[in-house]
Length: 291
Ligand code: HXC
Ligand code: NAP
Image (tube, rainbow, N blue to C red; front, side, top):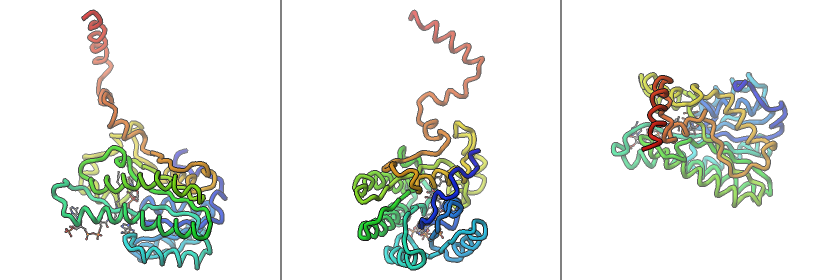
């Protein structure tokens, strides 16, 4: 069931949603479902050829309308141009999905200052740039709006080897909660999704290059023993974008099969203990009663 569409067919009818990084991976999966639910979608990223091909395939698959626009989220002028072009094509914009990101694995001491800044600029400042552009527009026009940010579970815990990304996603988490409080009065909701492992080419090429994907098999880290399916993430994103979630504001929803808690709980590693070993351990712990 989790890989099936969940919402009613008109859940996003009449809405226009801008999706950064909407031409690939999870951004494309979420955009495709938004289209199926009646939304118009503006997909943006740096590679116009990728966007145009994706837009044409997505229109064929869903019958919806997709506007592909080149935009580097690090450049506020390009974001303003996206807003202008979106309004010219669809008249209003109702939602923003901050999905674009950059990442790679590296020991932190090997990073140059520019490597660190590049990730912060794309993930934290890029999200802020898009959020500010849409927020200012909605406040000026006295329109409600919905912002959904894609973070990660290591925004809560931190993680070695992806430190710039962890810092940036942690910042986006803080932005989500801060603006939920500040902009609620304008009818602008801010929420975030923290996905666990959902295989995509973009993430796997940069985080699990070569045969690392086999050696570091994510599903073994997840209590449910599987990775995420793109549709189940799309179901959650569509719900949070829709008016059905109209009272949810400032929430971070984790969708990771329990992965981060598995890593966090002090005794979770005892999963490796066999029933025979448990028999022995039980005897030992019971006999410790008198000591
Ligand atoms: C060390 C690196 C590096 C690496 C780049 N740099 N790759 N340093 N190890 N593997 C350094 C460069 O040398 C340079 O520093 C600086 O970073 C900027 O690199 P550029 O290639 O000039 O940057 P740019 O063209 O802007 O590309 C950005 C990028 C790239 C982030 C480096 O990977 C990219 O375009 N990524 C977009 C897609 C992506 O990352 N998707 C995955 C999201 S997954 P110097 O000092 O040499 O100038 C994700 C999920 C996490 O976030 C959770 C999964 C479970
Ligand atoms: P992806 O396909 O590589 O998506 C990243 C997208 O961001 C690409 O479309 C890329 O397009 C765009 N992008 C990168 N830099 C940009 C920039 N400067 N300006 C505009 N767009 C830019 O990887 P993904 O796995 O689908 O990731 C999508 C989101 O999910 C990210 O926020 C990621 O952190 C998050 N996430 C993923 C996972 C997972 O397991 N896959 C887990 C947790 C969180 P261009 O290269 O054309 O610019």
